[in-house]
Structure formats: structure tokens, C-alpha cells
Image (cartoon, rainbow, N blue to C red; front, side, top):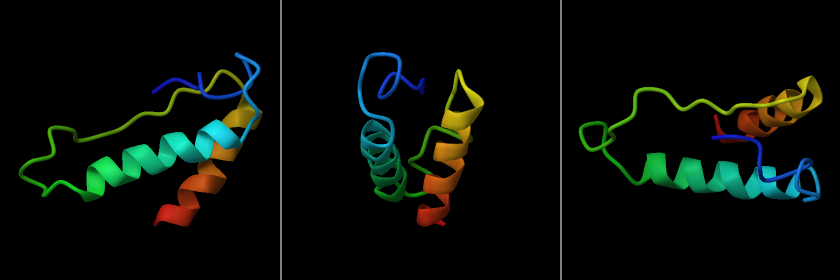
Length: 62
């Protein structure tokens, strides 16, 4: 999943990030391990600062 949801398209940083993470977490939690076709989900960031935002926000879902 790319970082389209903020910064580069004039979308406020953090706002789209939370929406994106909530959608991914909801999808993963709604599936049983047998139903989940993914082994890994990668969030691609173009800037180090944005990677830090993802890492911080992901800690809320542990």
C-alpha cells in the first residue's frame, strides 16, 4: 500500500494514514488465518518522516 493518502496529493499527513491503517486492520481481523490470502502487508513510504508516522500508528493496533 503506497502512501498516497497523505502528503504527496495535498492530503493532511496523519488523517489518511489512520483511515488506511483502520481499513487494513479491519480486513485482517475479519478473516480467519485460513481465509487470509496474505502473509505480509507492506506499507511503502517515500519519506523517512512518513515511515515514522506509520510505525507510531501501527503501535496502536498491537
